[in-house]
Length: 86
Image 1 (tube, helix red, strand yellow):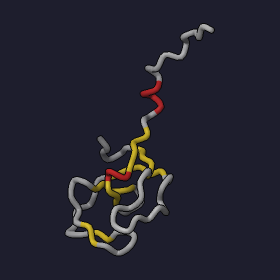
Image 2 (image 1 turned 45 degrees about the vertical axis):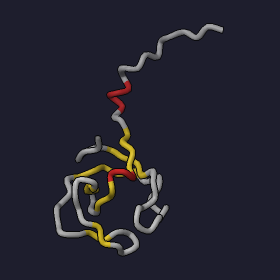
Image 3 (image 1 turned 45 degrees about the horizontal axis):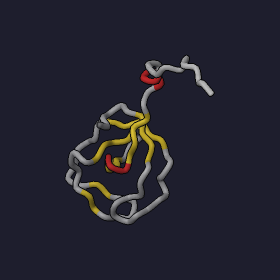
Image 4 (image 1 turned 90 degrees about the horizontal axis):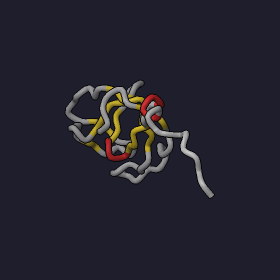
């Protein structure tokens, strides 16, 4: 589940105009400042609800377009000392 403060990467095009311009961009998420509507890249109006999350620096994005980047501290639990037999 993506929440404010997470590091995310955009993996899908925009849902309204199929814009691929932001794929691969990395953002830190923020609390979404609620308003009656926001404007998508193509100008389509999207009503803000729980499907959207804010971005540090401004703006918002549909959560389903994002993939959370796990913090490096979570990778410390992965075993890397196993030997590989031939």
